[in-house]
Image (cartoon, rainbow, N blue to C red):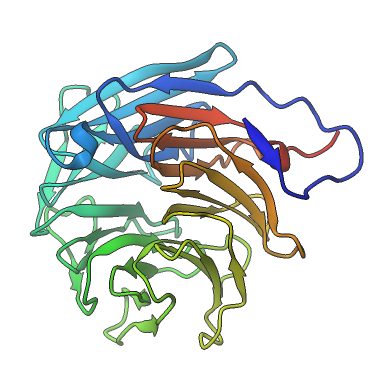
Length: 333
């Protein structure tokens, strides 16, 4: 399943939990996210026909020792490209769709969406629920080159953020700074926005290629990472954006999504159109810890569990979701 890249360490590693897979017949996975509340629950946003045509499905899964099982399934009439769990209700999720809309779902009400918010004029590729205490805000990013701010309790967007000159692929809230989010775009820039201020965003010309993903470090409020079509990941310190603080190379096709570890300050994971997931520690001279090759198509979705330090979920266009513990994240016992 995987091969190491220099992350040995002393002691005998604990035996990793068995990798588990769930098939999505006729659906191609775009995004996967663990529940922040329930340790065994995760959600996958998937689309028919690779997201080019057809409908979408939100699949909510339960994972335990016996395997990964279907808990709920919701269909939408267009492809679903991203999913985010509510930060104040363990049953609620939001998905984003190819028809320009966001859908709010409740796993306790399996009939259909509670709400549909349609303001974007093109595909919505990204949606993220703020983790900041005391505010319930959602940000969406679209191919219409705008990001929008939402309060899920209000039936329309609170604000629209304009300035990108290309498709927005990723919008991610800072876990540290209330009202602050990053956006990654096909215009080759990373932008840092303050939703509470009319100030223009900080613009980072991060790559000389389309940027498909970004994420914030969970341990350093000034650090974020970008991943692009140029196959590289770059770390950025907001106090000095002229040069990246690290660069990571190894992927052979575009980097589709990346996530910082919730448990290790310098560890992150990335998935790619090269079918692999790679685990990195940017503090090490040889930063590539491990390459996992268990998909046969573009790997688009990736998340690291908040409950289990070694647990990872990913999904791909090969119609599978996989939950596993890569050896590089297992702490020796």
